[in-house]
Image: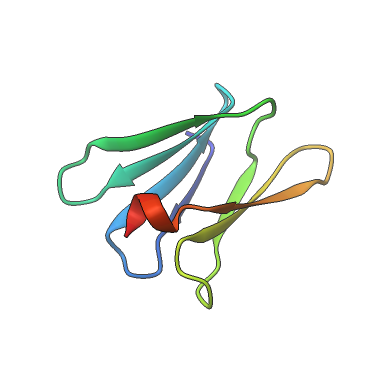
Length: 74
């Protein structure tokens, strides 16, 4: 695991890994809810408190991608 962010409501963790994936974890059960394969390594992940379910992930070339996980984490 390379980067981690908590969902604003505190029930999920979003992690970024060297295996070029983002994973959504349920804090209560410790289980992975969803794995999202990428074409790049997510170096940093940040939650967007004003937009629950939306996260920003940055990669090594300076690109930031927004992900909307509201359907998954609600």
